[in-house]
Length: 399
Image 1 (cartoon, rainbow, N blue to C red):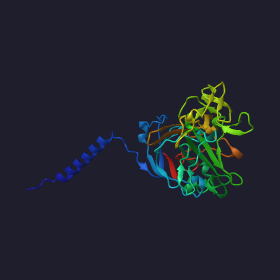
Image 2: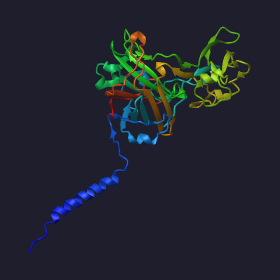
Image 3: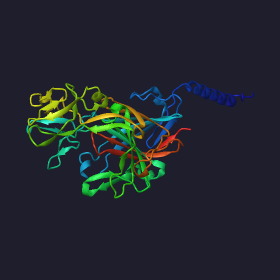
Image 4: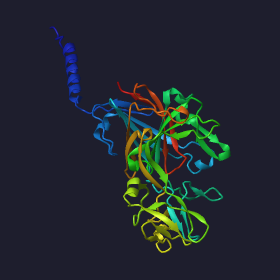
């Protein structure tokens, strides 16, 4: 009796059918774009995300760059208290015919916005500002936290001009200045770095990232500069007045907003619309006179004084700010704090008019060719200078 010989043929056919059916079933499932620890793949899109500080569903289609930053061991005063700190950072990117878009997320257990806030010290009847640096006792123990803002930075090599950038990236321009106990950024002659510097207090109220750059400065000075601007920016909310009836000069705030509590910046619009009032005089008790009439008596209103580890509710902001125009205002942003960290969305044109700055310096990276770009990032957690970093990351563009 002959045995059937169809089985070896039928089984593969059934198997193939099952495989095809399974693939067809999964065709409508979302495709995981994947995660990388070193590369950021910018996805080509025709319908870009809205820059509003909210993560749109379209971001799920982009690859995630997942990395960790750390504050390097730099033996200088302005890094004391931060070395070894760091955080987890996620970045995604998209681009269309005109713009490149980014979404950055990082963990941060506290929103820091009380940047060098003004307070009144009843002990000597003087107006003072909180320090941007942590305070330590003689044994090196931290006794008071800094009063600053949260920040984020991303740096690019303009025209591949910086030697060693592909291995060191942002570290390539970081140089110590022992006699100043500081770390400064400067490059060799002919080297240029584009630095996008988001500042939660000084620029985010205007929906912008501060577009800056680094270049060579003769003598090795600080090579960090701001891009050219036509108007806008931020200024220190400070002035020097002579104490009434004396020859003593003291520093006091320039503007304040009456009865507003827990605010950390003043906008140009608030000044122009007289929401913010100008301070015009100060007496020997620290009482301030206000333009248009009225006074601030911080001796009887103790909410202008320190409240333990914090400043009082009526602490006065250290800056006033206005929307930037010109090259310095090229980057639009929107950020939100979630209670566990920051969400920051931002965009810039692929190609901008890279005007020439100090000494003819080129100010902006050009993405128009869609070439790979090595970059580095920095996270500033309530820090003026010290920041956690991750160099040697790669931006690529999807075809």
